[in-house]
Image 1 (cartoon, rainbow, N blue to C red):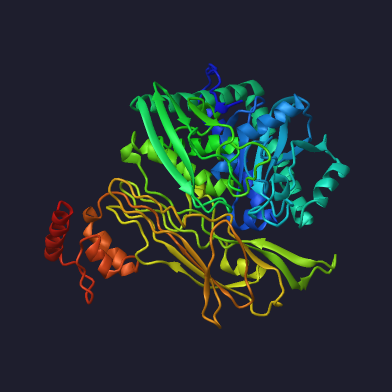
Image 2 (image 1 turned 90 degrees about the vertical axis):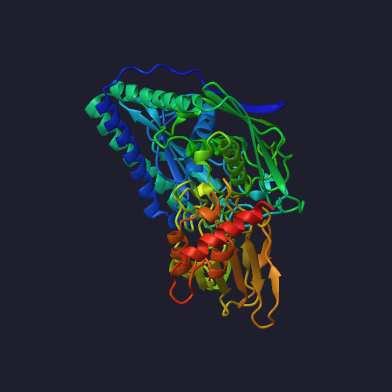
Length: 609
């Protein structure tokens, strides 16, 4: 097959349902999903799930269509459709009460990278298959030649980790000990992973019980009608929004630093076609597949959907219905539609994020009033290694650790009426992820955080400015043995070549930087993205992360806003004068309005020369 394409299924006609009942059922679905996520979140052992909220859950009907989602990480939520349909294809209706399934194979599940496991539980009511709960979360380990799943240099996807096709590990409430034992034997920290997997199954079982009570109250036929109407209303709303857009062809492009081998940027190209009430994203001119950063097809599709959702009216339902008018096309063998066994470890950060950026650029030509400045790329090395000072008394094994601060992530871009969101990181998180407490990080990882602060003059300037840049400094514990394995993986980091773009005349953000320094010799070495570096005890790691792109002309920024930024230390007096054209008195911190008016006129006049 020369190309892959997502086609919209034929719209179904929803049955008439009482709007009050529909609202109650819809909100109840979302509440149950949120409860499943919360139960998993507060009991999980995975550092990233527990401290960052790197998880998501969805409710799907028996066809595998997403009906409702929870407000967790979108990429884990929206890829549920393509992932669950891979289970449906394999098991062909062979589902039973009490079953529990998992998988992570990027070329069968068709989404994610290997640490993100898809967990699936069929929902039954009075012996009838009602639907499915899907949960995806970043596990503590998934095997491979290095922990964490972000290790550049793997020979193929087999080297990246354990590739799990859709498998049933619990059948009618009984665990398949042999099959689960095989999985456990091929991952690190297997007890931690085991606790998380069965914790999720328990949370889903409780969610199933809650759904049964809802079905008892309204009856299964009424609730099914609600599900059909939810999908139909999503489709109606999306089509109505698209129909208001100008027919035509629009373009966008972006890229990532490199793939860990080529030392050249890797680019994605978007051609967006609007025709009536449908849109098509053609990604066929994107670069050929390479190593480490290739994006599985399902994640490509739903990265485009994330860009669409962010530009539509927020009241458009997020389900398979609103996905029906959107089509995605890409050639096989490209970085957005790779072929097996190409590696995919860094894909969700280093190609998915630029793909959203490129889609935004195309959509902004249609909806300039909703255009957003670029967000900072994810920029936070993963700490992996062994701490020989800590021995597990139960097994006699040395502690293996995996974690990251997420603290060095930068900020979001501005939009009309709003400054960029401070410290939110890249768009993939959309505010659904959080930053771990530094104290928690320091208790689990042999580093100490020395400085953690916002950067002055690192925002994308504009009438509405981007969020500020972020600075983080941490030191590797001096009492570690010199030969301890203390490694930094930077396969989850990007943005040393591509700065967040400003829009509508706004300024770009800054490029990201990372360095490792030796305090005794004073020497520093650059820490690039898509690499693996050893950090010696006592060495210091420095991060500078960009702020978001600005929106609008900086000379139109409100004087009071510039003054406040200066007082808060986000903008220097010099930048206020030279970029925003605002004269702030250093002693009183008051704006000289007359001098400012003269200065802004002078700057505007020089632009025309």
